[in-house]
Image (cartoon, rainbow, N blue to C red; front, side, top):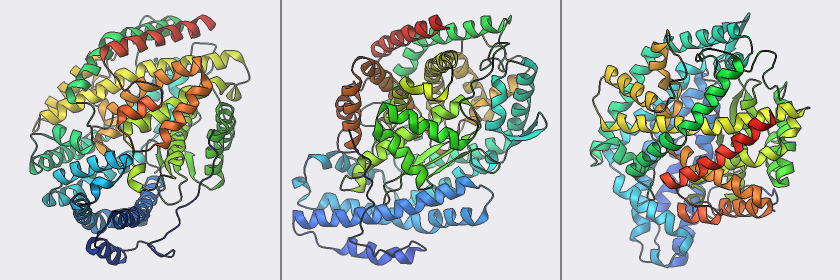
Length: 574
């Protein structure tokens, strides 16, 4: 079992008092690294360590700027600090980064580096081939546009039940047994989102055009081809993603239909409407695992400690150090994330809790990311800690499923506990088709450059229909359904980053299956894999965790059967 010893990096190259206020602060160190002679393998390693320290300092600086601008989207000072980095500092750093990459691979001693450098060197050579100086202004413009999504959506509120609520807070009412309240909440949320449809369409049109131009200038046929390379997807292809879509459609959608039909029967409705899918039956109450954010944190620390003491200690230390911002409020950016802080080694969790059961799952998920960051922090280079998202999401999604054995800390009765377990299994099953929907839609978006908004809407609806059961009646709300892709921030802020959730979810289900058979061994393998960071390939990392890197139709079929069995168990208990 790991112990929560989080030691900040001790600066050996930059002065302790160094702070990044402008590009001129960095230039002496950048010039030194560029001009330094690498006359031996030891000098090469020393150079890599100094470069890594500089990267860690810069990484932590931009992390705090991102955190602050997400905490208050209306704060001009935060926005200016964020813009300063991306407009004045980042473009120059990109140019230096390319020269450093070339210096590294040209060094005659690079082949003497040991095995743990192999993924990093592969990614370095890939980055060299992708770099085009004329793309730097486009990348800067895109970074600025991506922040606008949070500005458009972070301040959205609705008036409901005599209160002004953020959209996450309003979503709580969709769980209510009273159908009239659910419908009212849905209508208000939909109307508010429809109110920013044009702004988000305008924003997305700009992003699509710039992303396509970026790909063409880098020598690719389209942005999908470019982005797969940029994301270092060496171990799977677009065709593999399309096979995932087909497998989910065939093996997972029947489970979704079963869940929705059971919901219709429990609610005693002739047909489900979109405001019914999360509801509890009459006479029931939505799960209420906590009243205040402080209670959410304490209960989650207790829950995770029961799984493994180390997991609870990580979250406890984050609370002690003020590295949690969990409560939903006006002008706070939507969504949630774990932000690794490269120098400190202790991450920061940002989310929008509003009193729902899903808030518990989100905090456990982000703590999985935090545990991963802490376990990989001792690795000697910053590049070794920049692990692929497919292993990062395996860390977080597996944590959700490991934690299920200790969920009794949130509830005073067995019925609520079984309800929570049911919700988690149903959520996993429902998430896989949504992942396939978003991923398939992105494949269409970027292989059809220059499409019109009408064509985009038609493509979205066709994709949505493919991964829908037809059991939910959207009549009267067709316009809102047609723009429902706009609520997915990944489409705006991190294009093509979504299939990772699907790959990792399959891996997490396999981890859960192994955990039920041998908890101690599974947790040990899980932590051993996370400690490796980016020093092994994805298939090797998954093998270290004791599972397969596989999302073939056959594998998905077997895991869907496991989920089917789990669903039977929770339905039997209720």
